[in-house]
Structure formats: C-alpha cells, structure tokens
Length: 422
Image (cartoon, rainbow, N blue to C red; front, side, top):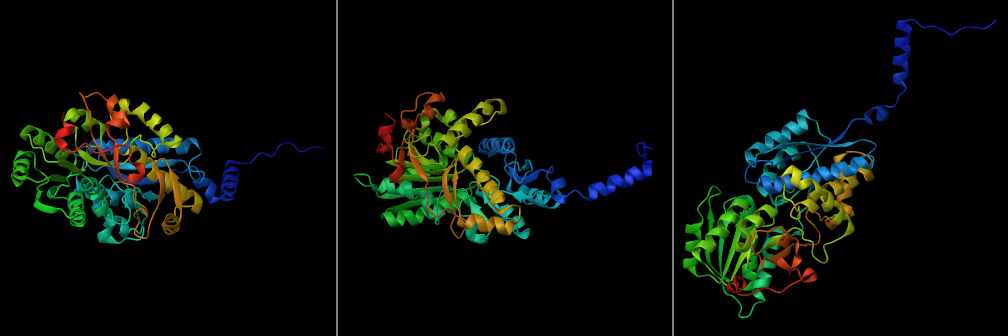
C-alpha cells in the first residue's frame, strides 16, 4: 500500500515556515543589507565645485566595489546629504546619519571648515572618521580614531607652506620680505600660522599680515594695501571664491611682486582654471595630484578614465585631478580595513588603520599616531604658458611643473613673477 502526498493545513504550513526561517543564520539574512557609509558633502554653495567632484569619485568607488561583490558579502551604499557649504549645517547632518540613518561608517566632508564641526558628533558616537581635505583639524581634538587623507605629514600647518617658501628661499637674488593675506576661517588661519613658522625658518621679514572677513567680495582694497607694503613675496591663504577674487584683483591692479601664490584652495579645480586661464600664469600653489611623473599608476589611470566618462553628464570637474584620486583612495582604505577586520567595529578598524600601509590610487599611504600621514607628499607647482581657456592645456604637466618636493620636481621656477607674464 502506498501513502500519497501529505497535505498540510495553512496553519501547519505557516508554523513550518517559521521553524525553517529560525534555522537561517542571522549573518545570511544580513548579507542582503547594504553596508552604509555616511557623510555630508558640499553639493551647493561656495564649495560645490570640489565637493561634487569628490562625490563622483566616491560613487565610482561604490560602483567598483559592488561590481566585485561588495564588502563582507554585502553591497556598499553611500548615504550623503548636501551641507550647502555651510558649517552650521554639518552637526545636524552627522547626527541624522548616526542616530536616524544609523550608518555603519562615516567619513568627513570636504574642507577644514566643514570637517571641524563634524568632529564633536563623530567623537560622541565613538566612530572612526577619515577626513578628505582638512588641515590640522585633529590638533585641537586629539581624537585617536581620526585619520587624514591630506598628504601633509605630521606637521600639516607648516607643511602647507613649506614647499612654497623653500622654492622662494632658493632664488637668486633671494627675496626678503613677505605679505600674508588670509581668510578669517579655520583652513586659512591654520595655513597662515604655519606660514609664519616657515617664514621665520627661511629668514624672511613679514611686512603685512592681515586676515579678511570670509564674506569679502571686493579684493582690490586688500591687494592695494599689500602693494603699498611693497613685499617681495605675496602669500595668500584662501578659499575658492576668494582665490578667484584675489587673482583677478592682482591682475587688475597690476601688482607684480617677485613671487606670489600660496595655500590658495580652488586653483586646483578645473572649472576655476578654465575661468581664470592666462591670469594664472606665474602663480605658485599646491596641488593634491597631477598626471606628473612619480604620481601616475595604472590604478589611478583606470579610475580617472571612469570618472571622466561620467563627469560631463553629471556636470562636475571634467578632469577630477584635485579630489578624484584622494576621495577614491579614502574609501579604498576604509574598505580594506573593513574587509581585513571582518566587520564594522570602529575600534578594530582604527587599530588596523594605525599599523598598516595602504597602496591606493593616490599612492602609498601610512598614518602616524595623530592620524596624519607619516611622510608628507604635498606638491607645489607654478602655472606657466597658459593661453586662452581651453581644457587640453590643463592635462599637460608642462603647464604646471612640480617645483617641490625635490623627489617629484619636474621644472624650475620662472622668477621673478613678471617674467612668467611675458
């Protein structure tokens, strides 16, 4: 005699399903849940140009990582909000990310002035944070789970200007006097503080040293005041809109010190380079990354190819040199720490970050005890032979040769500044 198929009642079937689900490991159920990385980014306001470029590079990392299977068997998901380039918005956004969205990990926003207000919230939640481009932020907080993607080494404020003044001191005849103009904001004040130390070490004399309000729009009076002090060197510490205003005012006034430039944020962004064009000639400033000898590698070439293919449709910096490599590398490093520690435990991730060397699209990165890089690699360049406003010239390393550090040097300073205008 055979027994036919057993038919279960609805109630019995439900009970059996519940029992079966109880046998499924919790980790397997969580495997489909995204691993979330939260942050704010300036998508509007004065910092939008670099902020949106960084965001695109991060999206490229997100897509690349998910194409390889994600992290810990989970897809990665970026959770971000526009801070509108307003530091006052940042604490609330990070509180929302951590308390409402309950993201697994956080990274910093763009810029010193935006990162500083995020720190108390991150610290209160005991989270690891990697900042994107923040100058000496951890000097005041001394937070052991802070790490920086700025290649300025253990003395970031000083290193921010060291290359500039090292180049100046090597000239013949050696310049003697310096004027400093800085925005009254955290990045610029930190940079100008470090500049004073570099100036003293080089034996220069300061003849003008003033900060201007962040809301300044007319820079002509500032430039005329500096011109009246007749310095050999004009060092500026400025945010993007200020940098544009200062360069325009210098050209309109016809001010020609022997050497000018400095910690001028914004001059690294392609849209600003295109906007200023030949007005940039002779200016010395920092860059995060350029397609220059010593900085190229196959991984960064591949990353930038993907970035640039998407940049036009997304309306962001078409080249992505300024923040693309280090924004992507920031998440590369965090992703490696998550994979190697097997989870999102912030204590374990911080321990891993402290003792490992990371090979990234941005180059080799190793963090010191304070979260800054063990070895600095800040580059200073001089714009030269810029004609018109075409983009192709800004892909040519000869238009921005590296002056410092010596290990990456690819050109010699045109000195004095007036000669670079010929």
